[in-house]
Length: 81
Image (cartoon, rainbow, N blue to C red; front, side):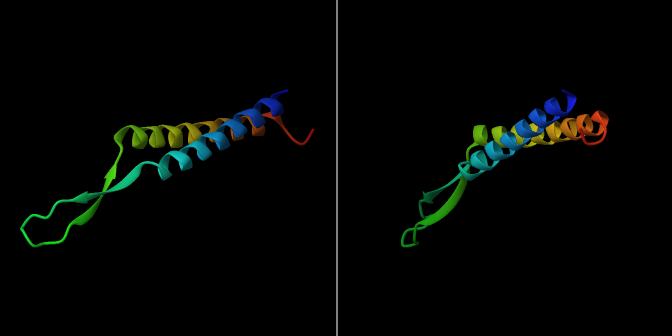
């Protein structure tokens, strides 16, 4: 039973890693910036969404914590069963 719980925790860690990757891919976008002086071209800049950035960091933290707990439970459960 302890090994099963460890695998569940490790599966949750993997799900958090996938969620982190998806969130990170959507966290940034490019916007057009108006020229400073007349006659200059429009430039592009990268803008980060603060809520998605926070979600990415929280998911990465949760994935790390769950991975440590899952591996610790696996080690405590003993050898192969």
